[in-house]
Image 1 (cartoon, each protein chain N blue to C red):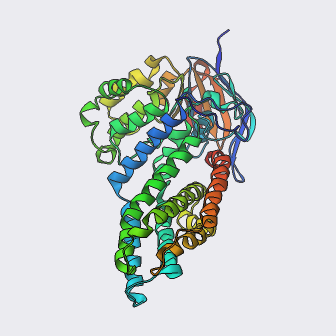
Image 2: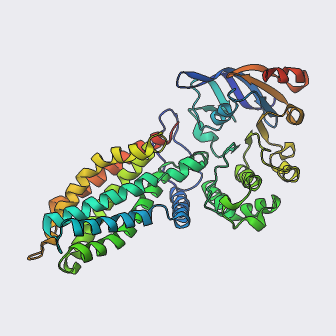
Length: 227
Length: 245
């Protein structure tokens, strides 16, 4: 039987009195892709931050890569790559300095930094402060940061935002299905991202309105989430 | 060098595994801190200019060419304290605003590394501040040369700086994630830093007596050292909790 990368049973997370996630249950096998749909404020980003160990679950059982959260969060850190709305990079540092900083935190060599900069066509701009780069270029550097340590699980929040079609192709080997990593993708693009999914989660007001294998999902059900 | 294991997390059943050594992590963080400060020049120039301006104000407001003893020591330490507050307020701003906290928390590293790196960063800021401020203080407010008092003054400043850096880092980490961080930082820091100002000023006062300068009283140096130690231990015990969600 395939090993589970994610096992959620009744996951809940609150912000004060407001429930951001409530009773979310699902299972994802290693190597599979979970695509999460839902309108703004549905809890997609909160879900990613819980899985990344940045937020504690307030209720439910959460296992990521075989480790229980939050008790074994230490065993998950370093095995997860998070690409969120924020690039998690310092604006005053160059792309190379930012990536070297993260490389040192993860015990990764500088050669890996150079390799990623070249594969993302950023080597020629790698010595410029991040604040001088376009948003698309910053997103490419953020992709490099997220995969720098070769994580087993990728948590991607609208990973193609700000990327032009050429850049989408550049990042595909690193964060696309070709990367052969377990992935959780938050998306607003049913037409594009449904094709990448093995399992689909539809969130509405923090609750799982839809959890199903992609073959059993009717695109109209996803459209319904946004109404 | 192998990393030191940090104490168990509030809700973690096993100690965190550090894939990267503590001092290697501290080195990476410290290098990043200094690079960001060199690029932005947000903290140290502001701290130094504040101290210089304050000495000028005292020079004219007191309408005296020289101060000595308790008055001189008080002016020096209070000025350094308020200049330090400026640096403390900015210490975690880039991390909070640009996602540095999250980037750090995602890494398999000992979280105490951030406490050590930020404390060393603040110590470096204070050292540069004092390189500018102490000669300016001597020029504007001391009637006699500072050289005879310098060894004792350096020892007192070093002990005071360690306490300011540790408390400043702790308080800045508490305040930075709040909405009123610019207000909360100084409000939390000032009461905790008052004993350092008292100890520092009392230890410095005999050094600035123009007629017969004497060495700082050992009990005040000991007080400063003990205060540093106590807050160093408190900061080490609390810091991981401050970074937690």
